[in-house]
Image (cartoon, rainbow, N blue to C red; front, top):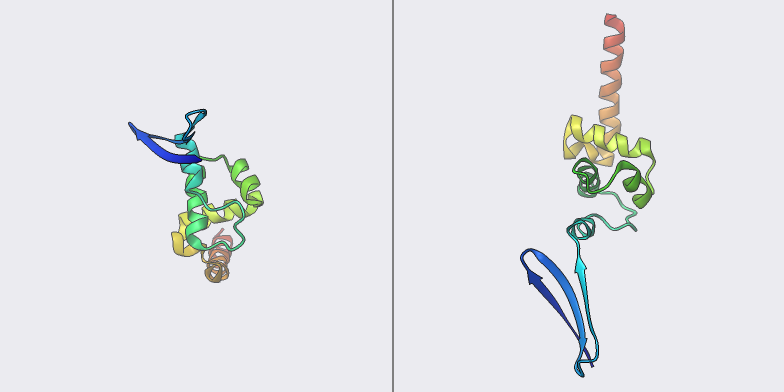
Length: 119
């Protein structure tokens, strides 16, 4: 019979598996990076709500993932990721809502046209 326990010590956690006969002890330490990766959206994500997009952008900005890793992990184009980051910067999390993208793009186009006319 095998039992499993989670062991925590000084901020590090590990999963320990052992048999009742004492034959085998297996300890696997979860790294801090792995914990951070586990907190990110699933790699199988198909529906991108604002909170998931924001988590991925923040993970890249804090160094948990590189932009390339994020794009590969979530099957995103570089352009799509950059658009999320740009919308987050300009409009906050609400800017990442799919229903708002067209509205924000229209406003951005109006600004570009106004700037072009003033030059």
